[in-house]
Length: 176
Image 1 (cartoon, helix red, strand yellow):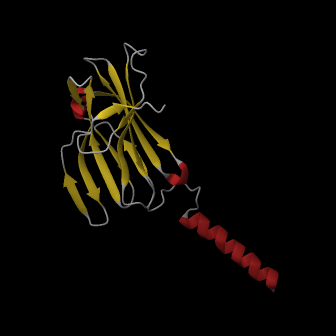
Image 2 (cartoon, helix red, strand yellow):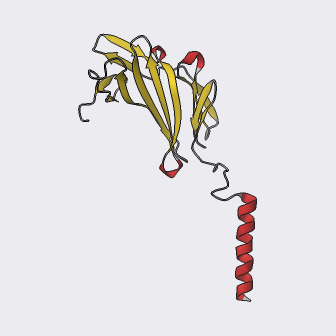
Image 3 (cartoon, helix red, strand yellow):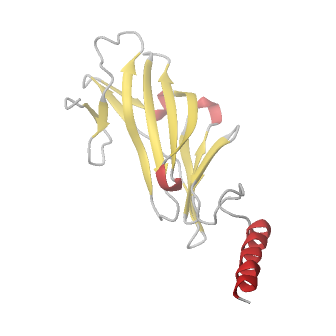
């Protein structure tokens, strides 16, 4: 009798995995993080939050943030970052064009969106990283992971970091 009930339980588990989908079924979990790169936009989010980036005109800018928990969408036009060069020239995200976009899978089902941008006028390359994890109502917004000159790599080692504060200014990271 006992082996018959164990056999029945095992059969029920197999049927439920086949019908409902198991961890390897390829279905997204309800609170899974995602990053979708589409021809005209990028969507980065999870069950709680979504950020929409426009790729219109070859530049990258946030156009909306969706709070899925409150069922609200905030439309906005943002300057993703600005970069001051030698305290004389201020470059903004609109001065850069998208060269490459990539999605990286992180531990725990998190996603990292990596955007490589180029300022054609000065031949400067910037890499932005946005991260989101499943089930969290926040995301890591736009960290500049590096910035470098494509013309003079010996003068710009390419290690930059964002400094705290509303200005969004960048400074050389001397720690690396």
